[in-house]
Length: 195
Ligand SMILES: Nc1nc2c(ncn2[C@@H]2O[C@H](COP(=O)(O)OP(=O)(O)OP(=O)(O)O)[C@@H](O)[C@H]2O)c(=O)[nH]1
Ligand SMILES: [Mg+2]
Image 1 (spheres, rainbow, N blue to C red):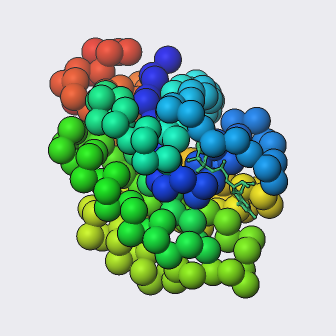
Image 2: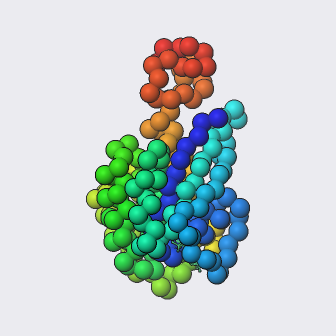
């Protein structure tokens, strides 16, 4: 099975662990504990009938003191989910700090910006326009998606977006047998068709 490492980063309390918990286990807690260092989750995603991919999701504690871990762990990641809290302006600014570390350590990582807590409509501090602007500045894939781990809104879509980005950039569909194989290969490793 194709396996991909996904790192999830963003300021403390933006809702990184909550997004992952909703996506992987379909649960939500009003009270959570801070992530100490880094935590891991695994999720198998069905792309089509005979193609599953495994996402190894690395959840980084947003607290400043853990950031020292990030440069070493970002290595080998296929994609980075950069989360900001739609109710906290400073959290969008913080994305720049994570992007800097990613760009210094790896050229090929697919970056996607995700907004959290969209159920808290009255407390919104960041407009979609500002998020789109940040996404362009930081050279991220597609448009930022607003999510709520509380109501589940768009959680599945946010991860679908990242999986689609991975397929688009990392895989190609064989014109002969229809299987997906690494875009780096010149020959389909299922049927031998030359790409
Ligand atoms: N209303 C609402 N609250 C949320 C949502 N997502 C997370 N929260 C709350 O935000 C708080 C922080 O959530 P976490 O998932 O622990 O945040 P984190 O980014 O993992 O935090 P660190 O591990 O400390 O970096 C918790 O009280 C969650 O219940 C959401 O979509 N809506
Ligand atoms: Mg956490």
